[in-house]
Length: 315
Length: 323
Image (tube, rainbow over all chains, first blue to last red; front, top):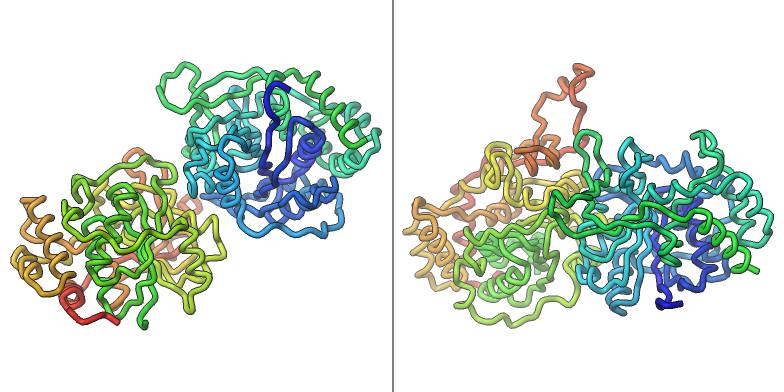
């Protein structure tokens, strides 16, 4: 490895694809997971926290702390639409037994702020849900913008249509004001949005082969993905989009992605634009800071890596 | 210590200083702390000003915590043209060095800890942009249990000051204001509509400067600065101190309860506090009409000027220890 491995705080709303991404991160030597911080999105924060605890328990890492995050977006109210995609339990209606673990004391935002400041330059934030916790963290401690190593988010749509609205991706739509704060905080930010995540589809055949691996991670995945898969089928997709795992993949190997840098304005809500992410490719607004935007991905290599990691990480 | 437990969230600020003097000297209040936010001037100046003003008031024991240095989304806009470069009308350097350091924790954590351990619910009196309070409500939502009510200086039903329709504190951080106004807490706005009405003349300011009470002397000097800085004025307002007065003597503030939301977009109206003054029966009258805003806050409509003038002057001129 040329780069030192990423020590990540995984800010997450598990969530089916959040769970798939967690297993990928856990199985990858390029990544050390320091903590999970939770947020509403694919379910309410209580649901996603319970699921985060199930994840660390499932991989035998009860020592990884789970910190509960904000219960509400900064503005407007949480719409709860995630249940249509991820099921009422956030895990594809798999109805798994609750974890015996408890969340750690403290809030997600305070933890993020203090953990980054404790080891400047070392911590990478990977956030795959609405950005409320990150916005609160940088509000509490603006110094983390300089002290964080890198921030990688799953969210946004640069040159493609949205999914939560004609123009907005769901994570940004769920808390547009928080996203505005995160996009303008001035830290090294990579946006892994729908341009990249919808370019990779794990087909029905790919998923069947994945389930057949038969280790604890793929067994977990086999229980939670079918509900999510059916949602995609109803949308006319053969298989599933690879949203959150793409953000983890960027941390593992950014050369998988085609990127371009631009200032990205997060729209706050006028006339249906809430959560739209507009890249200023021609620098006409002359605004800062620039964000590293993923526009394409080597999907075949990404999918091969995902499968290989899931085989060897849980052998 | 007896009295109504209060915390002031300030952007000190000339009139914030008057508010601090009143809160520190009034026997009706138990001032538990002050939290600072960027507003009139940058937060580091606000902290220094706040510590010094409290020391002048004989309340150097009051903890002061450092809060947010910029609004949630907006860029910082200084009001040094009103309050002087130091935020204190040039008086900061003439005041004794504070005897106390700011708290080692962030204003939001200070508030959350204080609210969690207070023996009775606390009245919050925010006098600047609402950034700290908004972050508190989202990051530490359990803190609301410790809040009795919020009496804030901000908003306008009539003309604004920062824009045609927006008052400065709300315009500085409209998103934070929207979070506070929709919090479901008991919120009262001491608005720009009444802000300018409780005034003292140059003669009265000179009288305070000649008082034996250090608090009155400082109040008089601050008023003297405002009068000299605005040579079109013959009287100067106690501004934020009126919001504190309305906590001490609520009967002195006439309020109406309205649904009220903050305009977050708008070409000319961002930061406007929009009061829905339609009779309730109208709101659902036509399906095409905009539905209810979904909240209810108390909005100042008139102030008992003489009552608040007397209250202010007695509190700052009284040489006795407020305890």
